[in-house]
Length: 243
Image (cartoon, rainbow, N blue to C red; front, side):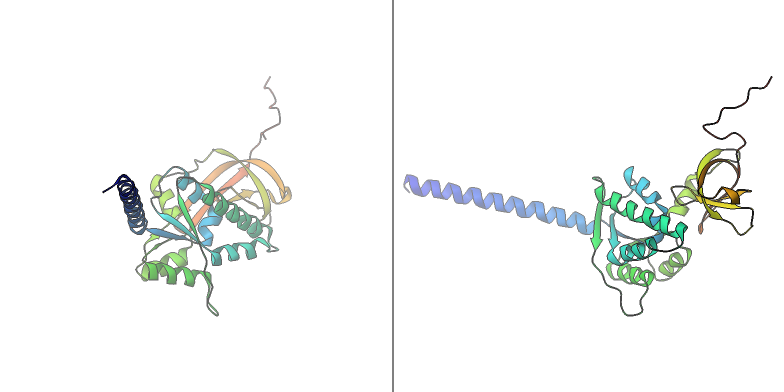
């Protein structure tokens, strides 16, 4: 074997080894991707927003899947005349966008189409059951339907209950009042995480931000609610010194 043939042989061996290494790396990557459970995120979980915080601190070892049908539903609600629903839907779209920017979490945008007369929740159950995936939702009814179909459900509300992340009576928080409650004197607002705040005697303060004192905090699998009253001393105002 002359020098030229030796060089060619060495090059061919090097190429063979490089291709083999790439195939092994690709196979390992695909194996881990296959083993990593997928979680379909519904509209309510995105509008709630807390999944973003959970993802940021590396508590999610899943591939998060956001379907086009969920994004379209958020877009429709974001154009709603109801200011409360509109703001929460826009917040949900922001959460979806932020999730895709996280380096520590794999997020997949799934291109899907709804069947004739099919609702988004039905589509998520269909996809999760077909692919053996999970569903992340805060919706009580979707939770029940998915569980009845043998689908594992991740509920951020349940996580919050377990972690006992409560608002303590007497704690002061700042909230924007966006509407009125069932009682004519009540004002309604929402925290950034979607928690509804019902404020006593605040119906006249709509479209303003106020400091409120927590009276009662309710946390169930169906959602969260805070009852509060307007604080006597608002931030930005000087307290009168007692003589």
